[in-house]
Length: 426
Image 1 (tube, helix red, strand yellow):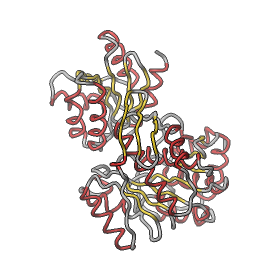
Image 2 (cartoon, one colour):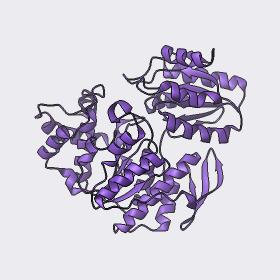
Image 3 (cartoon, rainbow, N blue to C red):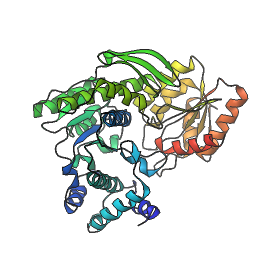
Image 4 (tube, rainbow, N blue to C red):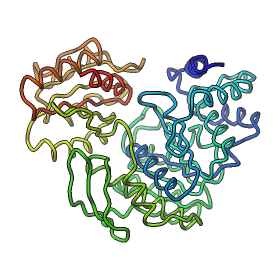
């Protein structure tokens, strides 16, 4: 298969029928000879922050001289973003070859794998073929029944902040969600877990106690912010030194602290990583679509916040930069989210909302979204028939008001590419 045929094959299963469980991936990997068993892993689950923590960890490990695989989801601009080695995306040719190889086994299964299971199998095959020293592996959904949980002996298991999301699949309470996410923890692994939600952390501790593990917590108290603007942050981390990151927002510093704690856990496992490696990795780390400024006049920011917990974190950073000014929001969201609660978080900061529908079958219709917002605050929202139209209108109206305007584009990672394409044409 060529590249286009490979993507068509992967996507034909789609996300419409999310089917959690390890039966299909187990059969597929058995047929493939279980290449994942040849790899070492940092396995990362959580509701928010896991993508950034994965990215920063991979950059630090690269600086330490390791060949690092990185598997994340979803992609923002190109599918290849999901599978990287040393922060370089898999090439079109390599993806085609890996997909063809996996297809030869997947087509033998009576129960067709899901799209995410195919992605996981392709990544495992590619990382093993390329002889990665370690793979930073992000969970797709949940943990216990996510296809990434087929791995047996991870070096480090990570739980980032946990809140209510995917409640239909994972359960209606924080304890339910924490319980299924904590099932990525395996005997013999080091565990790093965010403790900002005491209810979730209690569940994680229970899982660790069953396995005789003491979880480590990120040492947020070691962070001291010295300077922050739209170009990033300068901060001091006690025990390492002064650092710079291009990642914007206070919440990204917490994600960096999580990554540093992961590195400490890897050191305990025998990995050789110096303080300078940490500083260089943090300085070089990039992660697209997370409170990312992409245009200056007016200031346009994109973020993938798609649940109320993530939205509160983003609004805290926005408030620090906006300094009391209200902003224009281009907002699109999946219909299976708690849209009303998410809207309640950001509406106090909004002067106008441009309701759009991201390019995903699960997305809420833009007219329905605008109506929901206008029920809360009459006349605030207007529906646009495409993400591009909403973004263009927001930018034009912001320019008419002045250079100090801020346009926030958020609600789903699935709309960020459309936002960026509009901005690139300005």
